[in-house]
Length: 273
Image (cartoon, rainbow, N blue to C red; front, side):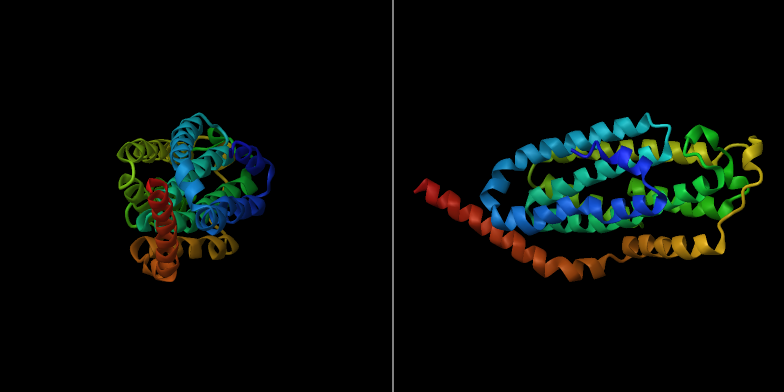
């Protein structure tokens, strides 16, 4: 469904990519939570197996495609599609863990994905290319950039202690309670995300600084620090202490899950009679 996304990110400026990843990509998940589940609970339950299947395909397929990308923005865009697969799975698990995990995953993905696009924008402003092969060894002259890029990469992978872990763990826990096999196949997406994210980081950041065009690059400017450092704080804060998000959403999620479950139960009872 989201195969349009990589091309849109490539054409968009950095600010456009941040808005697209941080806000617009969440509209579908919000629509499911706000309209599909509360207004059409029976249809949602009926189509849940199909949504699970599509979500697993999205997670695995787009992760494999991300491994083949040479453009940094396209790689992160395919990663976004994979992560939204966890969101749809969690929502259609229709339990407390799954729905709260999906909400948290949307918040976390907005922070992490937006930050990764900002990181790409930082070096694009200097080099005017997003090709991974054009870089290498940036840790030698851009250590601060390498550090923040590492934090966001680890959050994208779902490392414990970052916001990316909490959402993925809860969504898979919620799905596991509904369908073990779906959770198992979705877990392969975590392994694949580590593969493409660390592959990107290694090629861009590590290695010897041999390219002459890279030797004059300067580290993060004060303006870039003001933009990126708060995102570092938020990614780590919500990874260590996710309670503010859970406290704000717990009652609404509980009410949604209770109403959906009651509607499904009443329909099943009526059908049995």
